[in-house]
Every structure is written in structure tokens, then in C-alpha cells.
Length: 335
Image (cartoon, rainbow, N blue to C red; front, top):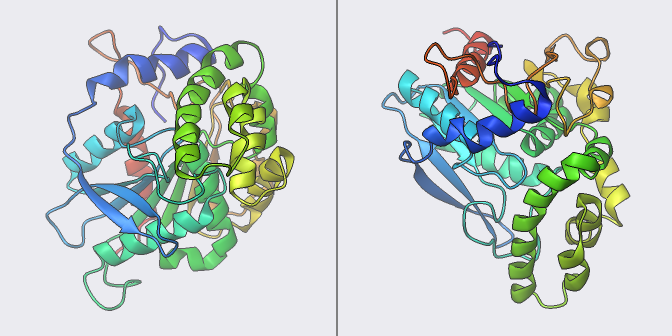
């Protein structure tokens, strides 16, 4: 992984600076093509594409983090690098995250493996150049960031060796593999004042819109009064997705206990100073299969990993994406 910008001391700075300053340079530079994927339950997923000229070009599929989208800095950086390389990039929006509220009586959550598979199945069909999608397609790597990393890792784990029918390799970045540990961390101290407050502000707006679609579906006053992620997930996320409460949700949707079933080349990247993902909750490399590479640098923050710039501020924002692409290319089948 690339080095860190020397002016960014500590996990909070390494998390916040890329989001609010440096990566803003990339926003709006990518002209995505939007595909609407209609789902069997009457809902939809929006997938934003960067297309490639070559039919057999590699494809990177991105599953974003909590309240993320194709406008997120890391999505813009990855799309920019893919475009420069002549690769496809597909940014999958979880339900309600593409700028339009979803139709159904639900939202999205950290274990949304059904939607992960629906998106990957559609993408595989899109990039396939013949009847046999397992053979007549370019290589595909799926990248999951934060919440998307947990959901993607859970899906790949549960699919086992059959996951290679959809993708060739997996990258997770800053994934909260233990949702309870991360949920507790985000609701404490400075994290609660910064990150929980930001997440809740947009999540509550979406919950209010969902209540207008489906009056009485959940306890709206309790949701709007929530001042921690735990209360919000207990009042909204858990009941809308079939869980008995927040503890049931966090336990059953966590991917950590399933990672031993990863059977395709996988790279799990977590900084040990990530303010939202405690270091003691991270997977241990010796507990994982040989196909899994664990990268846990001491620094990097939460989806930070900014490299130094030879030009001074604001720093290099695509080096990390370049590193992911180089690793992915090494995992692809050779023709």
C-alpha cells in the first residue's frame, strides 16, 4: 500500500481529510452511465458504469460504505483509475443511496447479500461476450468499502468456491467485520460527535421518506430521536430487514466468523488506527485460508490511505486505488 501523507497525524485526520478536502478534487470528473436494475421484489438497484472499449476488458465492481455513492471520493478515485487503464468500473448503489428513495418497505444493511448477488449476477451478464458467462468475460474483481466490504465479504464467504462463477477476486477496505465492535466504537466520544452525527443526519432523512411511503412501518418518532447508531439500527434497520433487534442484526450480519470460508483470492485491508473499526476486532491472518491476504498497516484511518504528494497539499488521492488495481490484476486468470 502507498505511504501516508506526512502532515496527517492520527486516525481521525487520516479519515477526515480525504473525505472533506483532497478527494473533492475528483468529484464530477467522471461521466457515469447509470443502469437501473429491476429486482424481483419490485424494487431497484442503480449501478453507475464507466465503460470500456474492449469487450474483454477487466471490470472492477465497487460496493460503497454507509451512506456512500458513486459521488464518494473513493468511488471517484477508483473510477478514474479504471478509466485511465481502459477498464470498466461499476459502482453498485445499495437501495436508497443513488439519490432516489427506493420503492420497497425496506432499506439497506450491512449483511445485504441478496442485493450483492443480484448486482453481481447482472454485472456478469452485462460484461459476458458469449453464452458461457464463466468463460467468455474479462476478469472481475469486487471491491467493498466499509459497510460494503462487510456485505461483500459475507456473500463471498457464504458462496465459498462457487464465488468464482461471479468474480475472480475480492478486496475489502476498512470493513467492520465485527459490527457490534464497530457500532460501539462509533457511538463513543469524539466518534459520536463527528461520524455518528453525520451518518444519522442523512439516515434520518431517508427514514422519514420511507415513513411517508409506508406509514406505520416502524416507530418514526423513536428513529428521529435516535442519537446513536445503536438506537437507529434497533428502531429502523433491524426491524425492516427481519431482525429481532440491533444485537440480533449486528451478530447475524457480521462477516468475521465466516471469513474462514473465503475460497477465492481476497485482500482484507484495515488500518489499525481506524477510529471506527477497533484493531482488536480485526481478523487474524493465521485463522484465515491461504487464499486470503491480510493487510493491517498501523496508519491509514477509515478509508483514508492517502499517499504523499510531490506538489504538497492536498496529497495524492488515486495512489491507493492504483494499488488495489495492481493487486487485482495479479489475481486474474492468464489467457
